[in-house]
Length: 353
Ligand SMILES: Cc1cc2nc3c(=O)[nH]c(=O)nc-3n(C[C@H](O)[C@H](O)[C@H](O)COP(=O)(O)O)c2cc1C
Image 1 (cartoon, rainbow, N blue to C red):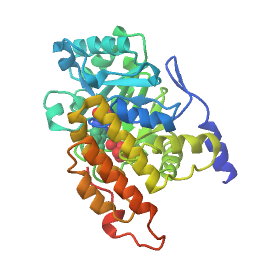
Image 2 (cartoon, protein in one colour):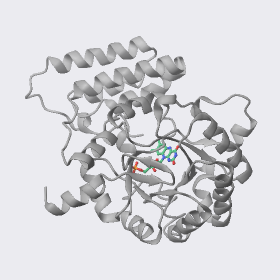
Image 3 (tube, rainbow, N blue to C red):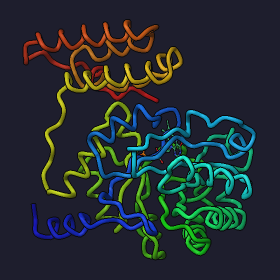
């Protein structure tokens, strides 16, 4: 490793301060709706003990009307550091929801101002707040007043290419009292397509004093380092790169702390973790967990001979035993495979979302 990279890496081994919360890691696991439930977070946590993890986003309006706390908001006492992510457009409901989040044990409360999904933006939440910066600031102020943990914001560059408003928007969030901002380097209209524009994240970092976390296209340790170098951000948030790969946050964190790459898990190790994930979903959510597990299982099955055929089978599993049988059969096949067998392009490909 060059001296420059070494020095740069050492500076990132320092703790990250989010208001009064001190993080021993600058690598964060993103909130992912339909993914980052307690079962997934437990796996990520095993490999990344110091990283901030997030719940899936939760509607403050729904919370206001619910009597019982939804599963989405359940966190484990030992999960710290953990952030509960909320979305909505009503400052009063968000303030109330934030208080519930803190009562549940959230170390920070994050407000989603980046979700591009129509169902959310039509109701004024997620990335539609990028078009209502005054309301977004009002929301941050209301939530900051309501809770005594740091309030953070996760957002995008702007509505579309013609409306990249992040510099003004991010400043408003800071002025409103946000203690950290995560910027996904895409616009709302891009969804998840195209390349994340890290250069805009660099500009946000220059303009603010609160920590700025870079997000978008962090699929490897190398990408994380490149992003940190190019943006000067205070940390990185891994997202789609963790689907079927709960090792990524820990791999990046380990490199930042030691300058060394962790060995990659073998396909068999990945499938063993998939089995744990499947069992966990069954224990936590029953039959609904099995239905939800299908997408996770297909994400684990990539990059080895027979992966495409295994995915085809896993996306139809009906029960815990069915899934375990599929995975066990694939593991024993991999065990007996001569090393010269070639991967097909389908086995290499990353299954779509
Ligand atoms: C399936 C899926 C669910 C997501 N759910 C959320 C969410 O609940 N809250 C949020 O702030 N972002 C959510 N995101 C956005 C990611 O956190 C992240 O910002 C985005 O994927 C960009 O990072 P990447 O290019 O590394 O994937 C979601 C993305 C995906 C693909």
